[in-house]
Length: 453
Image (cartoon, rainbow, N blue to C red; front, side, top):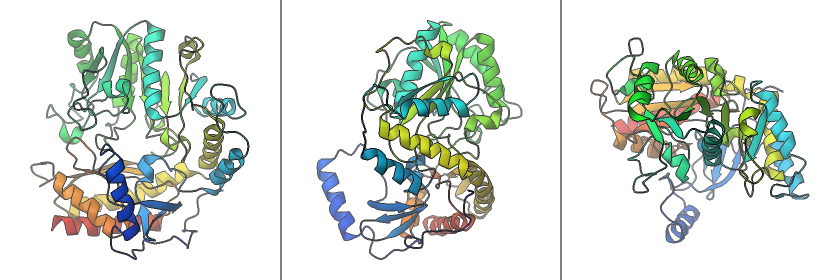
């Protein structure tokens, strides 16, 4: 069944603001949170979630918002998809946690992941979080190759555990500052952030962002003992940065020439988000290890590595596992979610609606001086806010004001991202209809106009 082109949930269809924001119940819960929880979470607008259906969210006070976050790129199939809810309910009556004993659903999920990925990826390890997958990928690369160095990229985000932070490329960011020293043996190269190229180059004449630079990096900053390169299909936390055409195939060829493993982190990019089931499909490349999470279930915590058996089979019993990894509930829901995304053609909907959204967002770029760059693929976009297009000076203040102004209009955006906190991430669920998407962009345009003054 294809995606419906119209909203089918009149009960929550909105946006609809019925109280001051935040409302009284939200204020009460936020006060409890501030008293008993650390301030380590992201600085989101004060919206307290109560219920979600498709692309709509209701807070505890009955206000309804259009969701442009997907719960940080998780709910690809939309909030509370009935097939996923049914799978959860049925499995909850049977068994949930089985530790690493085999249950009915974990091996079926592993089989499905192998079936939908390239032929060289013939084994899957089911885990719980995205950070677990990148940590495990490091372990696998070092174990298999016998080498210890990892090449990562400036701006990368691979999770918040220590190994994952160590391969993250934002050392001064709030998420890593003060926690060093990090894992040794990690070296960084520039990711092709063409809007802010540190070398002042353009994609048509830039050798420094290509494999020439990687050769120099290996020669000058490594012991020539590189096990793997790890890279995101697009850089999410750095500001939804998309690599220029031709860069990924060159990177893959460079890895193959040097017998270095290519680890692709698609925790954010997979399961239809970019307009294809997997983001790397846009570039005609194939990883040796593929990290998956978030949209794999559109709901409950589950993640996976899909890899080559020659690499995965180096693991010995007890060397890699997870208390909740591959539990029956998560595995069953993820399996159902994959079928939902494929059968309802959500990747295709993301590509089609995303193309329309990108065109409208580019119109906003021409309209507003503070909107310096618009980039996107499928249903994930980055809007980079600046003081002026001429200087490209980051403007985190106006960025925050836009997110807050959108919230007051019933459009939910995630807290600003990027190197300078000046990028708005737009990522609605993949079930969004064209008219819903364009209505959200119009609300965003009103928010920009208000914030820019």
